[in-house]
Length: 283
Image 1 (cartoon, rainbow, N blue to C red):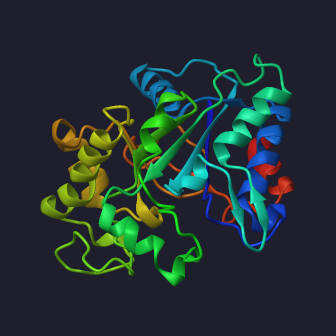
Image 2: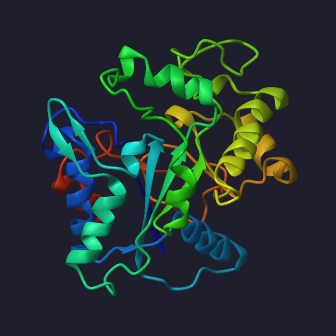
């Protein structure tokens, strides 16, 4: 099995071309993945396949390339279209998937879906939404709101996962971290801090989705440390309830990977063109 996890940010809109607009890239990539023979499955399905392979003494001879799609930070643009004042109409990632299904036979990529990793704290999301640093102060709507999480989950096309309590983001006035260090998830290195950033986030996201969220976590900034991946996540499953966690390491998933630090490729970082993605898919 070759496992590939691709990550996109729906608020990355800096132009109208593949290399500077994740909506343009995502639309094109659905076609590229299909043409390359990649099979799109849910992130939960990919984790289940990996668990099965790791449980066997020897992995089955599975030559398929499985691709899981993920979105980070939780802007409503993952789910709803909007009009950018400079770059115009932007079709949401969800509607790009719906468009793909309409244009192709539904037997093509029958498991097409994605996981959106969202920030739990309402006050942190409000601070991010209103920050000039994030670039969307022109919107009156709460573009980092949570009112779309449950309805998106019910479509079967988007699952909602955990991207921490507050992303320990520099613009958040009060982060849930004992050191008050901003901009680094490496600092989450104690039981209390991990509970605040991971367990409490999972609990709130589950409540906001009426129990429909998935038990998956994506490390903010892709940052992790030995305490999280070797102690807290594997040893406190009964508390945080997670099944796997994902970094931003930019490589394929192998049977040797820890479930608590599975790699992802990030659009704009690990690939910037269709040719780059084809190289990843065929690599």
